Every structure is written in structure tokens, then in C-alpha cells.
Length: 210
Image (cartoon, rainbow, N blue to C red):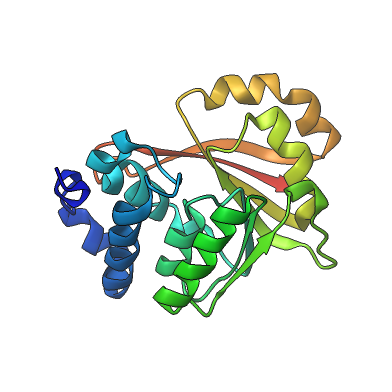
């Protein structure tokens, strides 16, 4: 069967969440459906839930971001490219160490006409930003106790971490208490987004970095 035939139909909520950026979101989703599995960006089981589990799961967090944002381990562009599509008013730096994924990200930035995106091939721990980012985000990268030490140093004083996490996030917070204290995170909380809007809600761990 053609892979395109297996892709989830676009949910009605997609147009509501993307607004006048929906056509760009469709273009990206179509490209990911066509090439994602072949290029090792997503698994074959993701096609039937591409919109709900990945695209909408990412875009629901779009209102949380402002200024200069870094997305760590961007991979296929989830959430970075999705958020950059939805928020052209925000400057995005997509940080990804793997060359083939960086190639994909650059191709999509060009194809989608995203002038608000820079792709950086690097590991997060090797990135230096003199002024710091306003927000640093990541999705499905690693556990919080590993993620905090490599991301908190990238945030400006008073900036924020905003990680898209799974159902186990509260346990991750408990296991990361040492890192949370060492990197002076405050107002650590979990916000559940998309209730009543998405079939599968998104959990975002937010914390201020001082």
C-alpha cells in the first residue's frame, strides 16, 4: 500500500490551531509522511497518527513561546519546525547533532520559506549563546535529570525551560531534584494542554532559570 494512504486524515482542529498557517503545516506534514520513514525520521507506526500524536501535540504549545527559542534534538522537526510554522513572530534555533537530520531540517526550512529559523548542527552541551535564549524546548529527547544540565545553561537569566513530556513527567521531576536545585530552577510545574481540544493532551514541563 502507498504510504500516503496510511497517513491519518487531517483532524478538523488542525486548521483552528494553525490558523492562516495551515497550508504550510499541511506541506510539512505531507513531506514528513512521504519521506519520514525512508529517511529514518519517524517509524512506520507513526503514519496513522502523524497529525494527532506529533503535529497537533506540538502546535498546541505554540502560545507558550516568545523571543528567541532553542529546540534541542530537533530530529524530524518535532516540535521545532511545527512551532516555527505556527509562530513566525518567534526566532527559532533548531539544534540537532545528526547530519542526515540536519539536512532534512534545512531542506524543510527552505521548502517552507521559514525565514525565522536557523538550523545548527551541534550537541546541546557544545552550544554557546552569549545573550542566552528566552526559552529552550525539547520533545522526546531524554529524561529530565539528563536534559536539565545540558539545557539550563542555554537560557538567559529569568528565561524558561518548556519541555514537551509524557505521562511519566511527575516521576521525572522527582528523579531530577538534584539537577533542578543545582541549576537553580524555580516555579517548576506541569501544564496539561489541549483538554477538550485534542484527543491526546500534551504535558509541558515549565520552569524558570535563575
